[in-house]
Image (cartoon, rainbow, N blue to C red; front, side, top):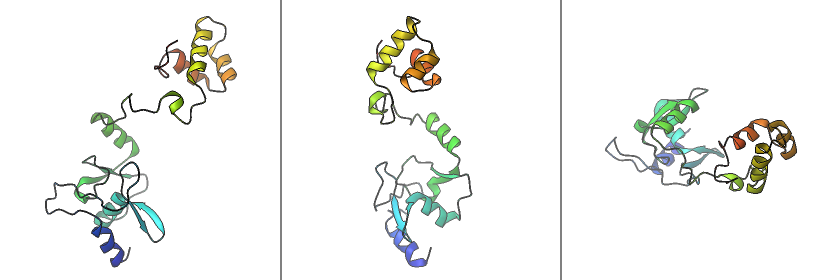
Length: 161
């Protein structure tokens, strides 16, 4: 990155004299709150650019994590290298995962192949021993693991039946 690009980047960061403060990105943001910056016709995530400018390249297999849990923060002292696994563990420890109320469950999840009625039918057919899990999986076009999670009430818990 050339000096003028670096200067332009930092001009969009709310830098504070206090290193403990978050330095929010004031430019464009993605819907999830992460800063979005375009450099050399390429869109980059602002906190990753801030980390790279302060610390050098991000090694392969690593991501840049926020210690402060503020997605728009670009304060290099609030950023650290981690792995997807360590970041997920941090999320669980800090109880930042989606709550059941905010999760895209059932038909609200755009990837769902089933609907509430199908789930009710699957549970009824399994309970009455009409079909086993593999037969139900074939009939509904999903995996046996999906059927197992449904009949054991690990997924689709919001559907009674």
